[in-house]
Image (tube, rainbow, N blue to C red):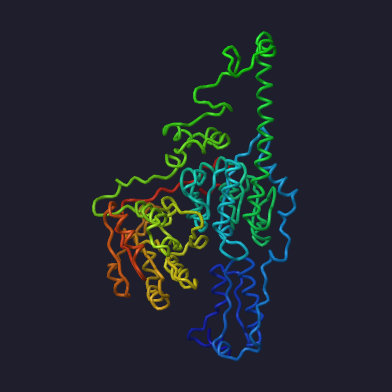
Length: 557
């Protein structure tokens, strides 16, 4: 920032930084007008960033930067609010009341989805994704509830778990078809660390139509935009574990009541002779003459339909009642198809022509390499940095991350070129050797490719920046999203040669069958490594939209 004496009238580099950053979405953005103002403003900036787990900006003129500090070095005084505020979840009654809402009664079992947001990645300001992820899945299992994540929370839960159904909220859309089906047919959302619940709780007109239960690290993350049945504040892992135990207890009671009602109803339906036959001495078990309720083909002992074939799983995805019946009855624990079959996204790799590599195959190879113990540990724990464009969809649909992974994405602004900058920052902010995997299209990568020099300048021994540039020579989201869009074709450099020019290395990938070998080579490389992925420009990712019939007016499409 310019010297204070030249602000406001000098023509060269005279920019109001606080307004610039505020316009970009940074709410706390201020200018320091004097040397004495820097210390309290710096305190407030850091306190805001820590408390709200967000970005803060303080512009300091160059003459103030070079001035002597008015105070000697002293400990910073800001504290995390959870250290001072008693978490609401410590009250046992809150847990019990919330658990009762989630369990429901035998005649009205709620259709629950669990939505995981960015704030679930942290605990008391530190990365707590792994611990939180384990507890979230405990709660999901207790409720038989499917789990969806925002893209910037991808990897908080183990995406190989059969109750994990991928990403929700891609370019303002639900993401994949199953995510859209689950949201549109649910009636209660457990929002865990989600910054924005609009896509989860509302119809397309922005009006709330689903119940919400909020779980967040502190009260600053609690939304006031929507009505919540219950709000629980505190350590996410502790809350989810406590809820899971309470839910399991209440579920046993609920199911017992349901069984009693089923037996009572059955007994009322059978004739008097059969009733006497049962009453005077014949147990159902081991008695060929015992009367038992007839069940339709494919039902289990609880009267729920079983799904055992791939065709049935597809029917499950198309039938909301059968879908939720499968969840409520716990069928997800019995069949692999719910995880490996049609309810998970499967790309048609044959759609990619010769001389090109399918993006979904690259994502799958990265997923497998991260789980392979042979892979270098630094690469296995690399931050995943996703850019904006078609690559956003491919990462959302085809990348399968283990619990505790960290994903960085421009969730709100959707800024192209973000991923490379995020990758450089992810490696620089660690005191130990660190790695970042950058997933970017050719358009987005070219917007910030000069930051390759930043990485080379600031990298530590052992740091890795692994860039996958998906080059289809087109701005895909524009070309595929609008009819007859013009000006979408783009050209670019030889990205392998570019990497070498910056002092790194790289390789070209133009065959789908070579994905595993190329990804393994990239993971093993040191420093900067770029994989130039040639993508068929006719291949586009699938993105579902909501079919919302809840409102006839205010429908903007």
